[in-house]
Image (cartoon, rainbow, N blue to C red):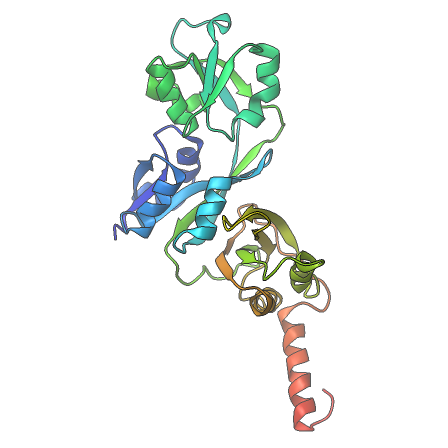
Length: 310
């Protein structure tokens, strides 16, 4: 395994690369672009890279489906870090191009919902076609295949393009979440400002099936920050659920919730416990702290031993 190599969704000039370079450890690693999210993750699985940074969620469209499906269904990997990056697009064009010359545009599929209204107002007749990444869209513009690409303004000099417009975003404070993924191992130590991600499958489809799963978190006071369903590919109506919960797997409330899921689900896949990028402390409701779980366990032991109440 190449311990000194990190890979990321490329080519050079993507928001993913920009997010990766915010991590201190990136300064001491060889950063290698990959053509797609699956390629970046497969490089880790195959030992060609120690870790990969990939987008997993944005504040406009929610989860990045390709990343979520790869983590849920591919050979197991683990999330060790996350990065939050504010996103603002520029319309990159070849030198000399005017706005009225732009008839075809491209960018990553996740970019389109974030610039849709701007396009309707400024490029109402332009046709959109998706690219593997925003930077790859810039490359395609450089090659003359499209008139413009929505990408980061920082990508313009890499592809000898010019930003025709900057600060393009339909939603204020648009943010994309990226995760640093490696091979399975021991999770980072708890910080008190952590997040745990997992995927779980329904045993069968019946009234209240999802509610039963959610109750495993609710009764233990675990706050779910995100939950999304994804098809398993096994037929219509077959779904798994990807969730992010506040807290670390070593927190009793979180570990017992996951054990509860494991009892009633045919499969549970831990995606990782890692520090939150926003450093917000986990919410601990009364009766759900580790100390209170320990006191309850001690009470039960004393009761079973006939030693009376604590």
